[in-house]
Length: 386
Image 1 (cartoon, rainbow, N blue to C red):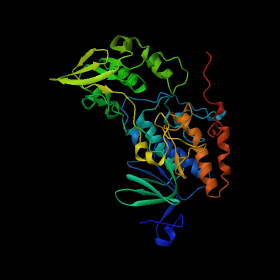
Image 2 (cartoon, rainbow, N blue to C red):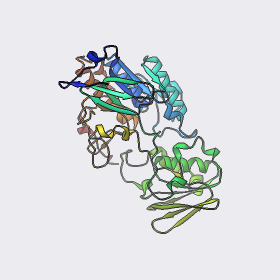
Image 3 (spheres, rainbow, N blue to C red):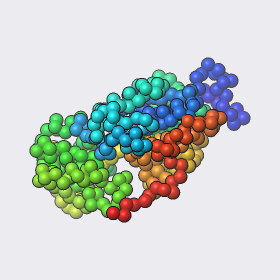
């Protein structure tokens, strides 16, 4: 048992043979791999990346047809980093030769990055509890306890689907559990949730000549915002204009679900305005993700919207040394939910940790010229004028 004496850690005194890392990164997806590369460039050597499955595992679990909504382009030669890159000098478009990668393709890309930069990744490590005593974090796993001075939480969201709290939600199937849309039995579906994953599900079902009703409590396909964090991507809007999409998919805006019931072999989706939508297939939930943060919520202050309060280094305001990387990063009204957004904060985190360790981290300065070192948020939040 690690104890505190005089407000300091006594790992070395009580257990001198325990390995204590300077940094442990939890999660080996885009955020974990990307910040791992940044730690390398910061001159940090004593770190470890752990994942419950393996590098890019969440991307491997995407439905087979689902592709990135952000396009990749090999633009490094003109000083513009590929939108889907997580590291300087790397381009998925160049290595994969595709513009909109599938999840499986991108997972393979992440594994190549981890191999190229010789990232210290340990697969099959499931962190079940995190505590901090004095200046050391304890990460409990079924097999061992890991010790570190700094912890970067980059465990992502996809493996933690959000199942809305309405009655009968357990009768529905979340799109995150679909391995391939062409394998879904039935030819008439109800999709609950009209943002990216809902439109993606509708698009692929329609491409297989299946019909679907796509409903949402709002009307996301008519959002007037140019911020892709709160409106549909151009890629999704373009696909919705396909003639066969419009003929196969019925859009139902301002349609909030109250209950889902099973009647024999059918399902009935009941809305709050007393509509009833009957379908022979389990309704599909395209309702986003809870994320992994509930595992460490007690180590962060909470914003009004439920996301963690972070300081200017993306560090917890109540647990020093704990940093957040990935799509759950929020600062005021700024949402860093896409790779090309949250990758701008990797160097900020790496620099803060390097400074704590007494390292100059001069290698991180090159991140600025590539748009990957966003430490001034005053330039964010600008809407397009046309």
